[in-house]
Image (tube, rainbow, N blue to C red; front, side, top):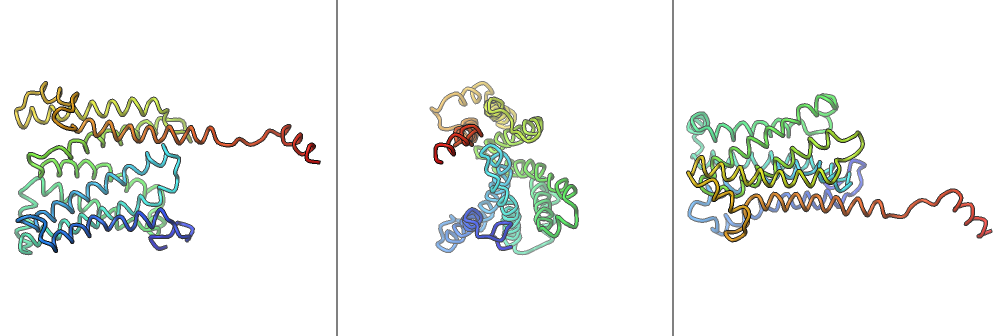
Length: 294
């Protein structure tokens, strides 16, 4: 099956569009590198960009399940594996660029991975994504069995945590994106908990999804304040209060709340459209219409 085909072998506009978009970040970084627009340390910037997009693709793959359920869009599941394999490809480029930045000295690379905890975490993340990518084919699903394959691929949740920690540790002072990613991860895992508790064949009630969004946003604000208080010695109350104002810009908690609202509103609109769609005529009405037509 080609990337632009669905599981039935037919041309899929969704898969084709997603497949084309997956190359865009890499092509953009390559363009910036070729035009000397990556700053004074272009290789280092390229390493950071590919690492950042690795985490973004992991999160996009995790978003597929709630989006598919909330939007009642089953075809979305066809691109989840594609996103996961892309994350593995980007992290491999990320690692290869790091090796190049170390002048291909593998002994130095190995010692750095052992000595620096954030590099150790990043390498474990790379290995995990490589395992998931290597077992992502239909043939591996058949050989492993569907249940065992699902158990193995649940390690993506742990990989998401490791990716966030690695992002935090190498970001130094610019923690805006890793903080909102951590908050949104809380929403993603919370949604999976709600979906697991929902009756079989049904999605979680929308009011629960709304509450989850508020809880995830609040947890993001508290987490940000706690992080800066613990590591930067900033006043906890002042950082927390900043999350209730837009005077100093959009804080991570607002990003999490906005993302949760978008998912919830889209799910609400989809459900209302499904409920208000054309109803099948009752047997009595069908017989009456047939009699009038005769």
